[in-house]
Image (cartoon, rainbow, N blue to C red; front, side, top):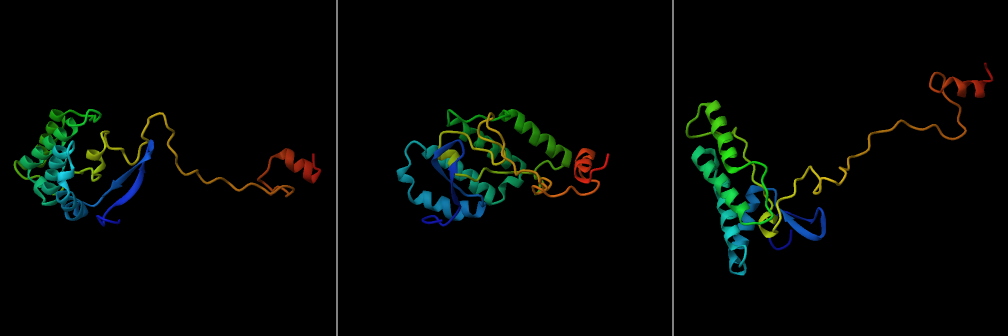
Length: 183
């Protein structure tokens, strides 16, 4: 992609007049987006605090610090602080509930400090979360719950061309009677 050299530009679902830069790759976030924004950070006025939190989260995860249980908790707290900066951001689970889940999974693994690489940790890699005032748009679900989910149509059986005779054993008895003249 042009100036930054990372990600792709898409229309924002549900708000087709807006465009989003989506960067899925943590390496591209760290090596391309963050240096670009750092160079132009003086242009950020309203979103500067949000960017600083976003930057800290990306750098900590890209450095592998999230594998330490205590640092993972700090990252989760930062992610919730980032959400609090937007009046439109909503999370399904509260901070304490997420921290309890992390603690219970760490206890099951029996690792008091480090959680290893098996702990699932996903950062929303789109910078649009802090650029736009709204919450992130899930990739698999529609933006609005009332919109129908468009899935590829299931394969349909081939229709017989007009005027073609039905194949034996395929059509109904009435069709066979009309064509074959049998009772």
